[in-house]
Image (cartoon, rainbow, N blue to C red):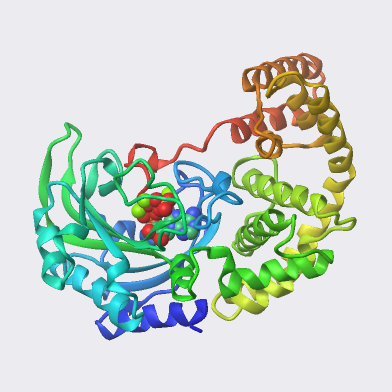
Amino acid sequence: MITLNDIRSTFLGYFERQGHRVVASSPLVPRNDPTLMFTNSGMVQFKNLFTGVETRDYKRATTAQKCVRAGGKHNDLDNVGYTARHHTFFEMLGNFSFGDYFKSEAIPFAWELITKDFGIDKSRLYVTVYHTDDEAAEIWKKVGVPESRIIRIATNDNFWMMGPTGPCGPCTEIFYDHGDKYWGGPPGTPEEDGDRFVEIWNLVFMQYEQFEDGSRRELAAQSIDTGMGIERVAALLQGTNDNYATDLIRSLIEASANATSTDPDGPGKVHHRVIADHLRSTSFLMADGVMPSNDGRGYVLRRIMRRAMRHAHLLGAKDPLMYRLVPALVRQMGAAYPELSRAQALIEETLKLEETRFKATLDRGLKLLDDEVAALDGKELPGETAFKLYDTYGFPLDLTQDALREKGMTVATAGFDAAMAAQKAQARAAWAGSGEAAESTVWYDVAETAGTTDFLGYDTETAEGQI
Ligand code: ATP
Ligand code: MG
Ligand code: MG
Ligand code: MG
């Protein structure tokens, strides 16, 4: 069986042979980019090379990039536990050309790697192109993809933009059909959101520069930016459509099952999946210097941790669980990402401390939530109750929403926001004139911003669903 670690080295080795520099993953906290919450694709560390602000001694690069999509425009937190193909933390494999080769080489590279080196069955592959990109469609035909499997898409899904201005261009996505035992339809159909046709690789052609007034000009230095989800490729090469059944993530699920003496595939199956996913994102974030806190990145981290802790609770874990799973993660990923091994002790201590603290209120908060739900008529939890859970028991709003979603229920968020505003006004009044730092007032401000709205970054204007 080809393991996830093998796939990483096959990919990097292939592009190294094609003259690419193997560059290390950049940290999850983007350098010099306070507007982007977490690194969410391979191109982030190369942004200045694409815009021409910076040049280096190489024009081709290849990476395995750590990515987190748990905030901002790219937020897959709510997909975890629900789809077979999304994680909050994943690795994106990529090849990049900075004004060097373009479409006519990028497409054959991709096709050769997946069909020869990885040996993927061509009869299961589909590609999409932007509807006006005849050039890309022609190249796909030339490498041997039949016309019937080249799908033209007119939406922004196949047009990438770095921001409101700057480099942009059409893209092409490669899909794998896992077969009719799974639900889903090909891209461009209403059923495309299923787990049957899975997007494995996205190739972006940076062809134009866009200006303030919306006009575009062909770029002098046209570039390539691609992203392949390693866990999705591992799934198909290991004969499953489920990323969580692949070697690396499965071993984390088994660690979670062992530590709780439960069945990995029993009634707690979803809990194990969420725990395995959140173990990766929280550990890698801490390895890159993010610590749990009540604002910004640190609050996103805390929210992910607390969500995982609720799932551990539902598995019946009496004692802190997450920190005990860290060694299993380090065994799997410590060699490829030495920063993880270096931070192991810190990660374990922090997880243990956070879980110990949260446990004290988690049990009582969940009991309160259960009682409220049992007494409820409709499908909507009053916002005041969600606020009480937040204020008294430390439940981030999204944790309460996550808990209710399993029951087909929601939170009346307007009521939550109103309760939050009232609390804040009261706190301000109480602190006024006291002469002390109004620490708790600040807490409410930041928690509210981070908890109820998305982080808005430079990528808010870019097309949805792309690199
Ligand atoms: P999808 O439409 O499936 O959500 P995407 O179009 O948002 O994917 P891109 O931004 O194009 O994804 O990222 C490049 C590649 O990274 C995708 O083709 C996919 O293989 C992988 N990928 C994206 N998001 C995730 C995720 N949350 N978990 C695992 N892999 C992902
Ligand atoms: Mg997509
Ligand atoms: Mg997506
Ligand atoms: Mg995509």
